Image 1 (spheres, rainbow, N blue to C red):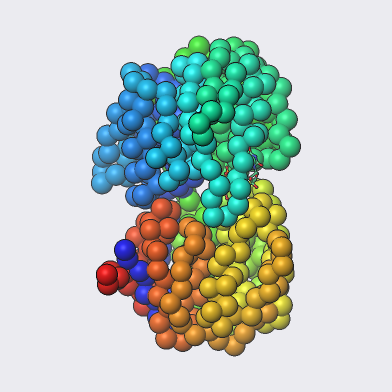
Image 2: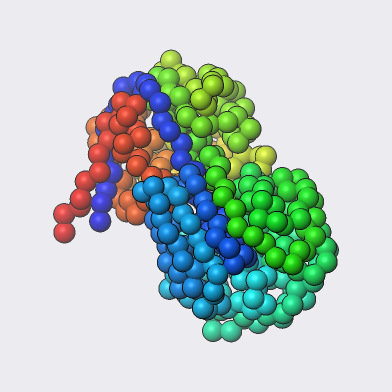
Length: 421
Ligand code: UD1
C-alpha cells in the first residue's frame, strides 16, 4: 500500500488542470445501459472508481473500450448478458447502485446488490426503491439484493429529501417508461443536470433538470451520442483551498464559479481572492491567517458536503472560531481526530464541529478514512511543520487523479511512497 508524504510547502504558484467529474462520469457510464448504440464519453477522469464501474458494466455485457489513455470511453450495450450487479463490485463503489434505474428501464428487470453502509453514514436507498415502486416496479429485498421488475409507467414522485442518487436513478428509469414522470424535490446538482443533458442528447425527453422539478416524458428508444464530462467541481474546490492554506496564486484550469458558488462566497468572506479568468478560476492569498467563517453543508447550490473536510483544513489555520455543520451525512467528521493529532483545536459534537484556529500544525502520520477526508489531511500538511504522512492512499485514488503531479506542479513538496511491509 502507498502513502502520500507532504512537507510544509512555501507559496504555491502556477496552474492545475481540473479533471472531468467523477460523480457525473459514473452516472453517465450507467446511462450507456439505456441504448443499444454506443455512448462515447470524453474528458473521463482516470480514477479507480471508473475502473471499478467498468468492471461492473462488463459483467453485464457492456463492451467498454478505453481510448486516449482512458480519457475517452466508448461504451456499447448492444447485447446485455446479465441484469445482476454483484455484491463484490457494488460494495466497493456505492455509485454502482445507480445501474438499477437504467437496467430496469431497458430490460424490465434488475437485481442489484444493496450497497450497505459506508464510513460516512448509513446511506439508505429507500427513496430509490419508493420511486421505482411508484412507477409500477415490484421490488423485493432478498439475500442482500434488490430484485426489481416490471414494465415501468410514468408517475408523480416527491422525494422527502433531494437525494442525488435517487433523482438520477429514477430519471434514468423514467426515460424509457410509458408516459410522463414528474420528480419533485429533485436534486439540483450540476451532475444531475449533466446526466440529463447526456440523456437528452441520446433522445430522451427531459425538462427541468437543474431545478427541483424534473419532468420526463418516456420515449421508445435512445440512440448513441458523444458527451464530454463536465469539470469536477469537488476536485476544483479541493485545489482552490490549497493556495488559501499555503499562500500564493494558483489558476484552476476549467474552473467555473457557477460550479462552486457557495465555496467561493465562503472563501471570499474568509479574505481569499477569487478571480474568473479566461481559462478558469484564479485563487490568490498573500499568506497569513484567514478569517474564520461558519459553514453549513446543504444540497446544491448550498455548500457541498464533499468539500466540508477540505474547508475544515482551512479553518484550522483561521483567526477565531468557526462552526461547521454537517447536515447531509451523519458521520462525516472522521478527519477531525486526525487533524487534532496534528495539533488542530476541534471540538465535535453530533453534526457540529467547532474549529478554533491555531498558529501552526505539526506533521504526523495520519490515516485517510474516506475520499475527501484524506485530501483534507494533505491540505493541512501543506502548512504543517515537518512531514505529514497520509496512509491508505487507495481512498484518494478513487477520486483524485495524479495528485502528486498536480500539487508538485505548483510547488508543493509532496511524494508518493510505498509503505514497508
Ligand atoms: C452523492 C455523491 C456524493 C455526495 C452526495 C451528496 C455520487 C456518486 N455521490 O451521493 O459524493 O456526497 O451525493 O451531495 O454522486 N438518503 C436516504 N435514502 C435514500 C437516498 C439518500 O435516506 O434512498 C439520504 C442519505 O443517507 C444521505 C442523504 O440522503 O444522508 C443524501 O444522500 P444522496 O444525495 O442520495 O447522496 P448519494 O447519491 O449517495
